[in-house]
Image (cartoon, rainbow, N blue to C red; front, side, top):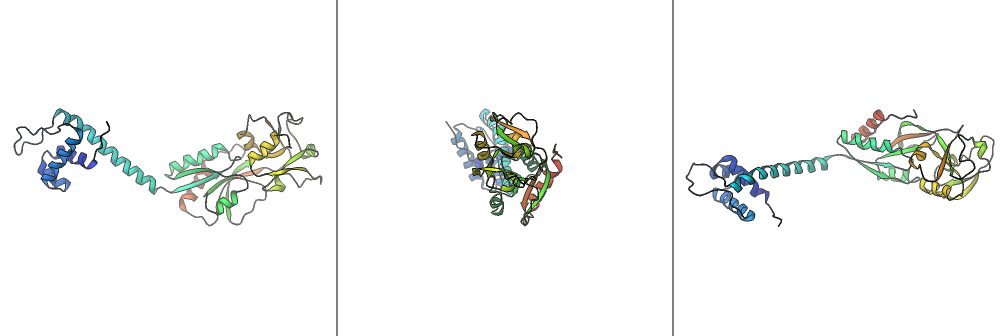
Length: 299
């Protein structure tokens, strides 16, 4: 049957044993001697055992413990030490700064893992939160995330953001696995002139390769994909092909899709992005730690 132990009673008992006397223990705990004696009695009543052998006790003879008292003392010391550690840890965690790191499907998994490990090394709580494609600006601007692991198209410019570049990722074309082009080792834009491409709800011109050197207008099919998952689902359904990065190809392997390297298209940039007005030391430190530690094979 569970027993509810009052830590104050445990502490009174441990101090009594350490001081070897009720008078000295009462002085240490800041209570009267009768109050300390009552506390020990209450503890014994809760446990249902006698802890202190009071038979034949004479003044100045110290405190004699029963066998149950000896057994309980060691555990009581351990319980009090554990309680103190729990309190200290809770207070330490509550005082730790917190950084919410937003990531999408295109974020390298190794990078989000690195952010967590660097946070632990810096005694910073890192919370990972998925951010759907197209909602990055709103989530960052609203302060719902502190840092974004983002995939930025060439020419990225946002006055309110600061991007710490970590590396680049090449573009690939994604097809359903049974598509005639799925087995190619590489493709150029000219190979895709007649291929319908899934529309994009975010950064549209880049992700449908609208600015084609030969002036050919892509055949765009909707509805516009609002997330990477929607884009991959539409490709898997046979509605069209799409462009994505090698990171998405790595994360979405084994999904019945084929990813073919593109030749002649600019790479995307992988970066950690924060608000320009966010100069909190623990945020800047985390970003810098990740930048120093990140070993990007594409760089």
